[in-house]
Length: 84
Image (tube, rainbow, N blue to C red; front, side, top):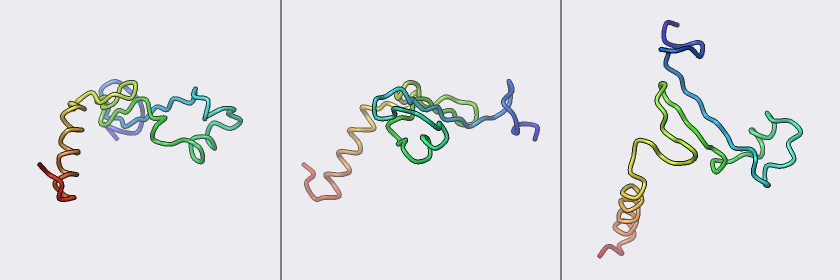
């Protein structure tokens, strides 16, 4: 309880923020139902884990996205037998 249980300075927190301003999310009659039934990962805009921001406006903050993408492509080719 000393590190969790509320949003306060110095406590660990996991939070996710969603961008519901996109046309596909409109109209919003019930925000909770919208999040549960009609919102996908493409609407995640910000993520904090243990109080550290990992995603900022849809961009990773602690990893090189280009390097990660290149690694994923290389492994995909390797697994499929199409590696150069």
